[in-house]
Image (cartoon, rainbow, N blue to C red; front, side, top):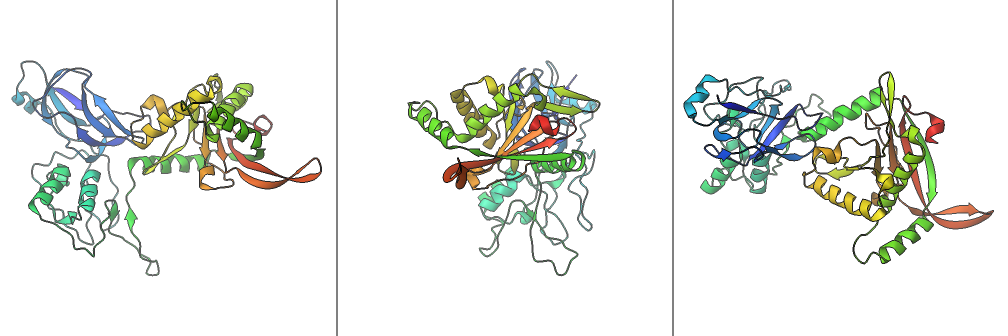
Length: 405
């Protein structure tokens, strides 16, 4: 019997995803463990491996399709001895997460909609959205193509990469030079006649998740904040000395030192290495420090495991590799899930101090400001020192003031 390949849940928060790219085509033979597709989740772009072996009989969801609900059928695998006719006996409907349309704007897709059998025109009018994959929009914008003039061959008439490439090859759809195209912008709508002109930026999966989780955090987590000013001169001198002896094997940053200090501190004060869990509190035995990294479309928090027991060189090289993978969208779930404490550092942007939002289920997040020269009083005399402000945001349900202080 044909085997259905389903849209996998690649993170705990994933309810839908974008099928970025198929690595196989119909008729290809696959074995268990072969990479068959790339899926964009709310966190990263990840490779999906085949669980069963067989021949790809039918690809249902094409490259670039968005809002594909978890557990929807995305392809069918034929087992040994089966031919394409065997697919006729199974349901091939595609579950797509519902889209709530704005008044006067048609929804992009319908729930549990059947597969489109014919392409539909995509007209760029003031009361209709253009239904196209992110990749198709990006290519169209780069090539100055008016994407609304292209007919889509994807599900429900969605414009996909191949449609744009064919339009480019045929020399059609070229936008005039005085028109600015933006791959992520839809037609602006407003009910306020005094509101200035604006564009609308469509939320990607990551931004939707950030909005949902941090709104929940601010609404349901009772935050409190504690700040301390830290003199950095001895730390900076130590960092300079260590880097001079590194012989190019590593380059320690202030952030690496903060991660190490955080890991040691959580080992010394385990009651702060906690999370609230209803009628219980989880006290973690290991300090797994998550570090906020800004990427296109949002941010993600790769995790340095057991930070207090790792050397500075190991932490430095590890966080650089994790940050690189984060920006390339190649983090694996085990590299960004399960942190027990977070750090957000805006010092490189010159920010003196700020208050970060707690990242549930963690109870604490440390906000790091810039190290700057300030006038201080030492031994009754005025002096100059490099000072950094650190502010801890805390979930009061899990940790009390005195413990965090």
